[in-house]
Length: 372
Image (cartoon, rainbow, N blue to C red; front, side, top):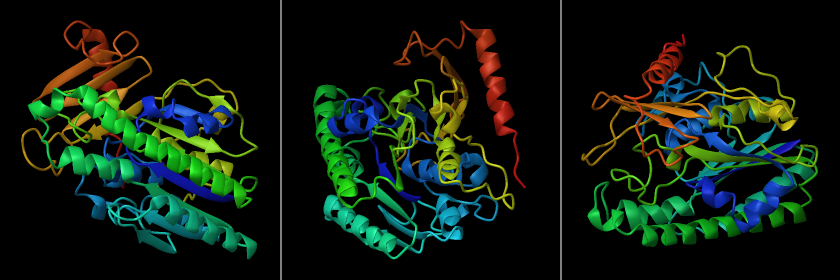
């Protein structure tokens, strides 16, 4: 079976579940609408997805740490595919986003000028030709236009405390909707081309969002990569193949679960020459098992500095019901009952002391896990 993996960079969960083309795919495939990302920014998020390992273990926990990825300890998705004789090809937004090991070819598109729909259609055709030659293929596609629009119209003109930006939430939301709708249209056109090339029956299609994007919900974060609130932490994952059950799994899972899921669907065994991973396959959940999983995330709050910090300074741990946040930068803690307070407005750290201690211990247990 072949693999096409698409990242819709910065696609918000609340838009995805209502997107015209997303909804068509969601209705007939395996969809996880509450995938908690390892980090609310693409570099650390995608290294966790491709390795199945949290950033504090794999070495990539900040904007600056791509060169620190521990490729000798953790085997990545493209390396797995390459080692199983797949042709491996990727098209990304820049060279820092992904661990490149295992790609036969990893191209970088011009996010300001390239037509990604046409570019990615051509790459699907290229991979279809490889299939005709009797080769299995892995194609990675990164749709970056949402990110590009936010960069040009939000990140460049405003800072994280701009009164003009945070006082115009309706305008911000409308602009984001335009960007998302273009992304939804892209998905529809790519999937139609995917079908026309006859790839549907023998190719697993995986579509994820890497993180969400704020439209001004919390002052101090104009877009992403600052806080550990659900606006940016909740991403999604969609697994499309005729042999997979049609299911919408309501409970939370983790972005580190995506790699082992793909490996199980493709019948690729875990390579025991490498360290164990944090993720667990989602296939049992696709097949009907009900299960809860604890999710860990990290971010780097730049405060009023111009650049994000070299090391993460915000940690969170999340269950389906509770979220605990530890702000390293000012030694504060937050606790939210997500069922009653999904917008995370009422910090219960002082009122719910027993739960606070319990969640804090859960985080410490996870952070104390060591690699070689």
